[in-house]
Image (cartoon, rainbow, N blue to C red):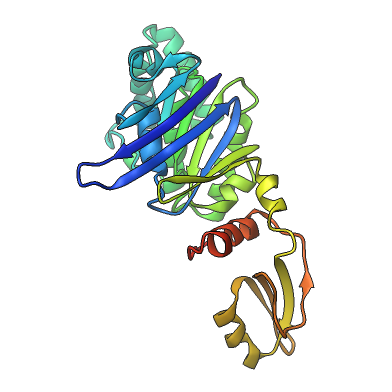
Length: 298
């Protein structure tokens, strides 16, 4: 499978330019779309799933033009939106059966088999008779990915899937998505949570204010950050000054103060040691020091 995006722009009626000259090729595997809230990620996702038309530009899916072949492209897609909704009074099984019918599974016996398999796959088999509205937050997100995967789509697009989940459920969700990539399919994971990308994606793009500012393997972004991540030991008195001057990534209490990791071009008069960066370091370095945009990481 291949998605090719060429010179894509989206301008709203109020003049707001949500996407600006996006050029991107996405192939089989897990692809991460990273950026802060308002960067244009959801707009791009809605265009890819044919819910929104671009202002200019072209998207092709395995050679099919997204605008001219909408019906054919939709048969290839599974989608979990950020604001996933369901019929709360349906049981988990009933809702997934309904989703299977929407996905084109007309045979009752095939539907039954696929629904049972999917409930097992996402860990909801024991909750199959529970009303969907009574599921926990993590279970609802798993039901969301189940409805996106039912019918064996070749492209699955998930928008901010782990927002609001506790750490255990977030890890479980990431592992579930990673397992899906054993098949020949594209999974696009749109998120502002750096950990979702670092643990699952072989390739990624970084959006900021509607523009694509990086594209490639996460390791390439990390490589650009080497020489800019420091660890230092500071006293309680120095700690407040360090927080004012540097982009602090982590803090650990120590006997006489704090062990602090910072992203910076240099640490001035503070003694420090260079350390190997990870993707969270790279994201902060790129957004704050390269682009000059204040960011939060999770």
